[in-house]
Image 1 (cartoon, one colour):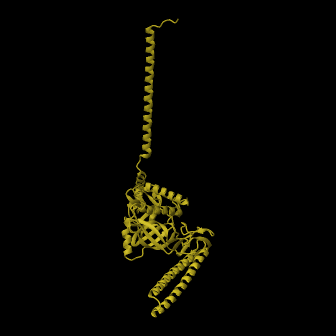
Image 2 (cartoon, one colour):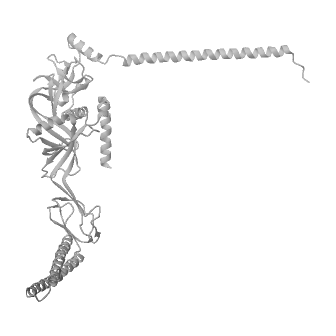
Image 3 (cartoon, rainbow, N blue to C red):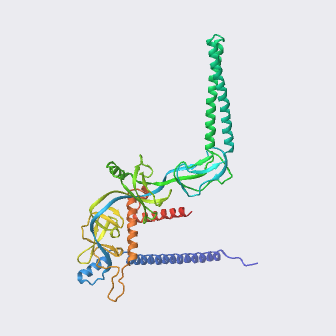
Length: 480
């Protein structure tokens, strides 16, 4: 047996365990506090580093460049390209998205049932109204027509005999040889035969019409589509697809929508009796397809988009326009004379609105807010903010700040070493100018509400992202 353990020994063992556990808890608290202190120090260092890297004012480089220039021109000038504001005429236009629609569209269907005997056209052929397109087997209808004519001849013979008898009876009645009742009966018989002959004539005309319907002709002039039925098949007047579809494409129409705010100006031009010109371009807005005139304006506003539909007419002699084709329409309202014009590439966008970088005599630039007028191609009218002869930056503005020192160059400029100066070449400048012009035009249309109020409320960067998504969706749908 093991010796008994006293109560005092048990108590000492318990005290030792408690002291050991208390010491371990103390060390754990100390280690936890040290870890927290280390993390706090790391966060403070990270914050200080972030402030050092990102906390400097954005315009500090521009201020330094301006200060160096003021101190003696030791700052390095930034190469840019510039153009002068000019005076000229510019068209006031409204840009819109449109769809080409045929002036008339007709689905050619059979008017009688029968077997398709012959097709007299080729797919895609241009035809005139009344041209023979196809023939249905006429023999059953010819038989009905001959029967109707035979019935007509029979009833006409009966009518002629009844009329002779009526003439004889009237002579006998005059001699008081027969009763008047017999004459009256014969007269009624003649009228009965006359009714039969009239009904037979209608039957003959109906049979002739059905026989004529076996020859299918073009109801309108236009271009034929793809044939829907092959020779030898039975066709019916109730067929949904018909035989072929004809679209009238000369002339042709374009339907497009403009913001309701512009309707007053359009109606004012129409009331003057002037033919408002409309030009249409391809999907990307670069190639001009046709020129025409405004035909009519819809009689109500689309409440979902806040736009009104317009229809323009084009001669389309060269057949550049095709039904259901997507186009960009440009409606010309008027021409402004003696307007201040600058390249579209000179226009910049900021939180306060559009502005330009104005080149000063000391080869520095200053920010000049401007009020824009209408766009036309690669130029834009400036209603306020510039005067004729003012020099504005058109390329290289992405690195500029107010007061920055610049060096105006050309695409062919060379530096002192004989190498090309660090400026974008002509192609890059033209591409940048084209991109800027297209975005400014698109941004103006967004401001007019052509793409809905949701996009209109977005910032400029969000607008670009949203319009890029819409373009990708449209291209994906078009390729599908």
